[in-house]
Image 1 (cartoon, rainbow, N blue to C red):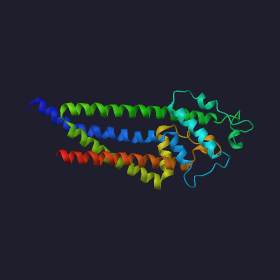
Image 2 (cartoon, helix red, strand yellow):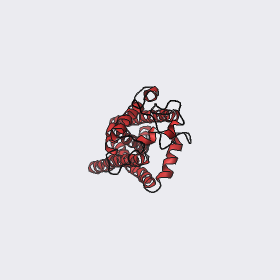
Image 3 (cartoon, rainbow, N blue to C red):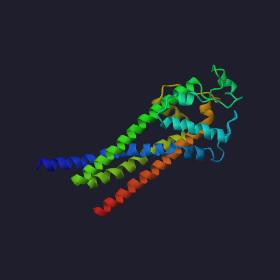
Length: 243
């Protein structure tokens, strides 16, 4: 057997699994990025029975401040982007939160600002991983096309779709039947324990109550499942046609 044949056989065996792993990352992060957008808070705050803020934020207040928070997570600004925000003249944070602050006219307290900085760092790192996964898929696709290994590449795309669906199935089960446990585990993976827990009167909880996060996970999962099915079935059918 020639060395070239061995190399070709190795590539055709390894490439589908490498592409599969990259697809899982790329698809899930694509869904996450689609949700980190103003359209989602517009949609979510208008869903039936979404809980009102017992401390007085109106829907317009929530839309205004949540969109600023989203902007902060995606831009290059420092934490002062949020730290300089204040309540309108004559208003201040609720008494429970105010007791932990030196200036109760600020929209966010120090604990919230620290957490938002942590969240931004996690999201920015995740986005870089997403860009890298997309870039790697493009490069592998070009390499496969030039090396005449497109069947292996397409097989990897299809496998990646199915694997992503399997991962999301497990996540969605946790969200539906054990959300509290899942939510704690999720945060403890990405943040120091306890740093993401707040008072009900804190601005972050008033803007993003538990219902918001449960729905977020479900929407991210739904979007990712649709993309995954398109990959899994679309490239499987193409593979059959070319077989």
